[in-house]
Length: 432
Image 1 (tube, rainbow, N blue to C red):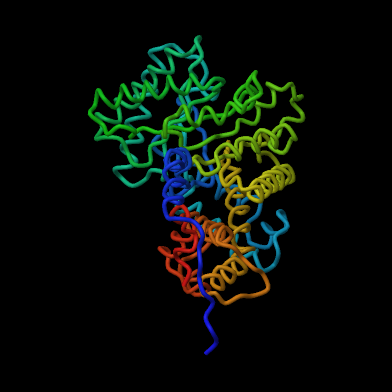
Image 2: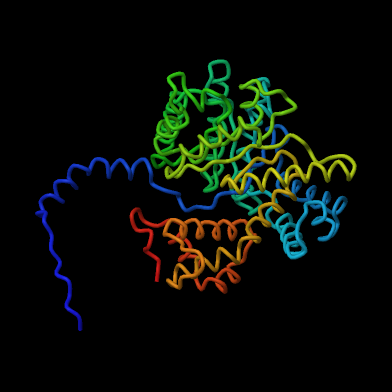
């Protein structure tokens, strides 16, 4: 045996203790401000339905309309793949999974809209629509026909519509309470936020409702819609959206980009208002950086080009929507808005193709990392985290099956969750 190197140190233990003590406030601040991803399922899209159009069969109706569009404009795997440019290898698995998804779970996240999609109405009419939305959503969760996530978008906190928005939220939430309680998948969306103080005011509103009904503090969370230039950059040059996340006091669950309101706010001509415009890319990049590590998720916007009319026109709209969705996924925007049933086939086609294209490589890399087997790519713990998250998102939406993931990785879902959401400072916790 060779002679062992002698281990020597120069600093007294008190030095380390003093440094740790001095950084204790920073440690606490890190935990508070950057708790990491919540580890829950993120829907791949949000569907907006006007308050007066929402009905008990809306979820199933959208699925049936999407299936009818497929049957009419791309009735088999080959024709669907030809429209979207899918490879022969992906054509059948993507097509079959899209159809199965439309039959089983056509909508992952639905928002009954009382803002732009609904507009100004007489108070009695909006009251009735909000109460009906609460009753129908409560019933859907009871009978198993609900989307995984459902809720409303009320009017914003600006003075002209503030009281109406507050009342609609109150009517809706009270209706849910009276119908048996708040469902686990409840999501609220606060639109057109320009100042962090509006977020603070909304938090106070939710706190008041929780106290009245004896709910746990923090039970009600919400998404913040980023639709104005002021929500990205304040007059003093700071990133307003970062302030908004902190103003939410842990209640913010998402930042949703509003393609057309934001574009119009910057003066972008109507013909060029799109989610791939440079102005949109800048806004979403700021949102993404502000939200990183906070547990707040970023959602892309929508396209207003609807897949309706003759087949040629539908195919053009499908290709546009598919391309925008794939572009967003590559930029780590894993959620977007869908405005029409005809968008749903290409939403799921893009999502499923994205995960199935990279599945085998991601599985192999994570398996090598977990087993310390090496390979032609030297992955770090942070990359293992990304690989685990990628596979979990593919499983959650239906692009992948747990059996095929387990076969290629040798890992359980619990293992994947350990890689995707490790404890702070312990990114190697699940490495074997």
